[in-house]
Image 1 (cartoon, rainbow, N blue to C red):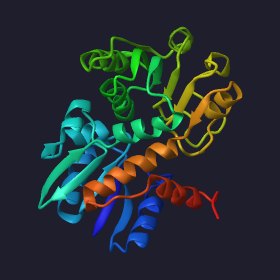
Image 2 (tube, helix red, strand yellow):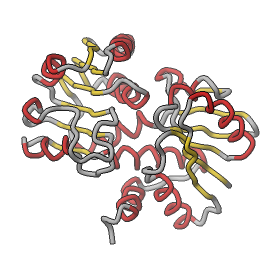
Image 3 (tube, rainbow, N blue to C red):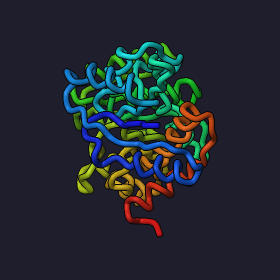
Length: 279
């Protein structure tokens, strides 16, 4: 049984370590590998190959939205979000799911809070869409500011957030003014952008703008403790690393592919061990 992760870049991914450790523990005869797909032009051909040669696959940046238009069927959540991160192969039919939103919501629950007056989301891609969908579905936020490089995708996602039931949502272009406006009074900050990935010195939000006593969730997990999280903790914030989200969505993927339950904490531990931080 072969499963894959497609995207670009994928070499940094800890998903192979997570699933391989689970397969070994659960006695499942399966292999999980990565496929680098740097161009959207290559995506249709790769998807057709996976249809015939895999039992399922995961999707990461930059193809989550593209894959949503290439599968045969979408779950309700994937359809609403417009992005797919998990695909099951049934016969030769491809069924697209979004487990990012559940991974986000379940990792956010570790903060011990259910409601946030105002949230700032940095990024407007597939992962950001999943986070906004989760906040809206859980009625967890009253006011939302979304920031993207151009501002166009942020404005579109803010419009969808309002359709999903967020009372007040604004999307704007990444700038000092917009970041300050979004961060001021925010009780939750979410980095759904790749800023900080592989670069411990980069942060999507200047430390002087990080609100005190808030919750900060960074979807980046390599490095595990990003600059954003370190500076947030120094301001008394609750910091949630991206590995929790990865572990929770992996547990949901295992349920979809195998009908089995997996412990997210154990999946996360397998990833930490693979990073050289564990025993």
